Image (tube, rainbow, N blue to C red; front, side, top):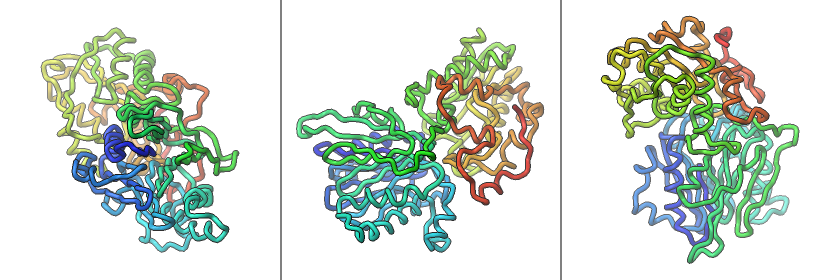
Length: 476
């Protein structure tokens, strides 16, 4: 998600560049909403940012504020209808909404609002509908045209549970919101003044590299439970949630996999944290081998750390096709299998006859890992020792990672001592949760580690509880 309030700037191109920097967070669809003060225009389609927007489309999108989104489907199918931003034609010019995360009370909210199944096809659409319905109530108590979105959000936000980082635009406002637990990241940046734009501008973005690419300065992270409204007067903060609901629980998987290595979260660069994960992994789960290789891209920093700590040489053993997206966030099992074959290929001369330590960030279903081990065996590897820079992923995520039911998670179904045989490896070792938290460098901060521990920070619906099943926890 990437939003800009910057009169006098080339808004559409700024959002395009920002979304391009965030493409790793979603590869199914892309969209942009631009406001010229009177009309909010939305363009969205299936595909990557570069296929949805061309030069002609960007030239047609003129305005002073805009909001963009790339989608990774967690609630609702991967369809054009569910591409974002969501638009509702209410208020002065309508409003557009972009969402990163996943609500946990979607069904309850839809039922209480009297929405029949099928009326809204995603939790993001549901929020857009709820906010739109709140507008007449705001008008009734005397709100004017401009404050409508702000006041409607203050009505709706306390009703929501789960993970949500929202961006919104209307005729004259850019809004950024983080849920009370801060599951998903969101930051605020500043564009300096330039000729034709003496007031500079403001930016909200899911990750800090999106600020860098447009020349914006990082100001701060938006706090858990905070709503920031930007207009001609600059940013203002609101706190819509009761204080007892606010507690930092950033998704720990942001550090493991999701975020770019050059992102800063909680004041720490992700790459350095991943390097430390590898160092601690080497100390906790040593291996006798000839070469350490990383699974591109998120496994490479940890592999470098493992090599540095163990003294085993680091090398390249897998070549990544840079034109293939992230396989974990592909929407179906078949798509993930096909993508792994297209994405990775072993360097035979590097691995043939050698005992390998293969470092990856995580094992979820085991689909990708099993194929990687098979490819390395076929390329002549003498031994394959898997080292994973996170603990076993044994529980579903309900906060924005599209993981399967617990019965489909490898660590929940296969005992730890049998995982290596199941994957075709000679050994498997995981980083402990304590080692992971210490590697991040914020032991005093709160993280959501529900996918590892089965302990969730928010109430779960009966449908979510059904996905947990009755399987016993495997591994540490």
